[in-house]
Amino acid sequence: MVNTLLSQYNFNEEWARDTMRKYINCNDKVAIIPFSFGKGISNDMDWQNMYNKNNGKYYRETVGPFVDLGISEENIIWINYFQHTVEEMKKIIESSDILFLTGGDTENAVERVLEKGLLHSIEKGKVIIGSSAGALMQLKNYYISTDEGNPEFKYCEGLGLIKKNFYIEVHYEDNHIQNKCIERVLKEKTDSIYAIKNTGGIVLDEDEITLMGDVVTFNR
Image (cartoon, rainbow, N blue to C red; front, side):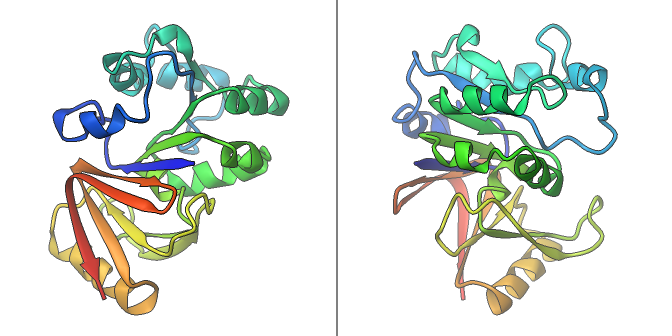
């Protein structure tokens, strides 16, 4: 399994392009797993407004990098939380070469994967790419920094797709609040934190870690 951890959906840009080309081939089939939507998305109509090909708010920014790297849109399929059965979801995931985990609410995304019983199918994935929440949820454990949207710092359990004991800070801007959170986690939980800026990412190919673009490493 190859795991890619990003802050944004921009892995087609120059800082990541050459590395990602090693893992993305033009004939690959991609499954988008957009389970990180908020509680306000409660039915298929809401879902369509977010991800529909014709007018979905997040459709183009999600598929765009794959298309730019040579994958046909016909080879990209979205798992619809409200329409697909669990068996259909498992079939899509297991028949895909690349799984993409979207950004948004990490806790909701983890909860929905477990609720649908999809973890075993996802664990079979060849290449897993996740942005923001989609990166955090791949870890065994992660933390949520305090910011405008998250007034309370907390530790959470991820899916455990990555066994190595490190944490990440996504959307790293080298500000005081983020750095205080990083200091706390280094003291309480781990020896290493990778702070991923919006033009940065990490690739784990088995045990080998490759840093792409703007990533700052913090060690205890």
